[in-house]
Image (cartoon, rainbow, N blue to C red; front, side, top):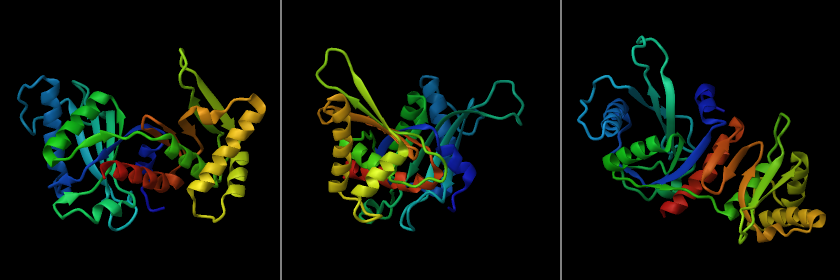
Length: 288
């Protein structure tokens, strides 16, 4: 509710690739401008194949680092950190708008499990999300790893976690008309790849979840299993196909969509903290 709508809008409706990040050593939020200059010089040098680039000289790529103070779960969490890369058009006036190239952001939403066990020189921002060319993700990741002695790893999402996500998000109330709940399955051991898409009307999905969930606000593995089994049974009754034998690879709801490769699109600002809390939990589980 406190979040800046303009900055929140930047995070919505983009396909974000997920990474887990070990704690950053020696990171100082007061030095964001210095970090931006150093990162800009590093990217310019790498793009010029190792030629030296003077820090502070105006470059074709502009780097901005800023805090997203409202994106955290509790006082124990660090504020999120947004990294933006944009290009300056050659010969353009200083007042002309820069063209966005790439976005990345570090965050921790209810990440106390990690931060409570880490000494003071470390900053815990275990979840990293990137949008843009992989080459820029690699450059930014490389600089952060060298500068703050941390480690980036791609964060995949298991079928089990996808089933949790679809159950949780299908049961959420929305003020406006919701899009269909969709599950995409990959069928194994076939010569040609085959995917099965299963769409459920959002009101039907919510009604099913409401009959399954015993205690509002609490979710158990048993409830998620019952929810998925009901969906599988309905599909089998109509098409005589056992979806439980296939692999769940993608889910889409009005709240967010998620792919097993670790690609997420957040669609609704109201549920942004809840989605990030779940993703932070996944990132921490990979680090530990």
